[in-house]
Image (cartoon, rainbow, N blue to C red; front, top):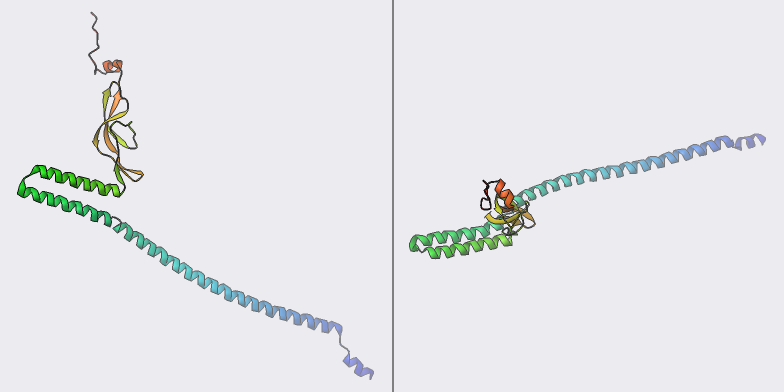
Length: 200
């Protein structure tokens, strides 16, 4: 009986070792499963990233094409408006062939110029006011200075109109600017001889 009892006894070291080994194997299986899940998840994210990248590249190409088309046809409406001015000019010229009435031609041209200015104004193009204003190199291009007794750095003549497009200078006005000079400066420059006195 003692021998049978000995057979039934369990070695605690062996049982504990088996239990630990079993737990380790279970943990490894759990880790393998989690790793496999994470790898599948990473693959899904990678595939999504590749699709998003391809979609973004297609989007960039589409936007670039739309921008190109927009720039190509951006002035279409403006050109249609200008064509109506061209039509009126052609009619005015055709009418002079028959009537030779230059007063009517002049009035017709005035009306066409007004139509053109109205179109420009609606598009945001307005003339720069120059004469009588202080010279400003942002808005004016001085091509000549004229001597003046009372005005200095004031625009006195507009050679060519300048225009603004919304808040930007489209073309500066070409102007003549008054430059104030004293009598002494005039004498030194040989410009004013009226006040000279001659001493023998």
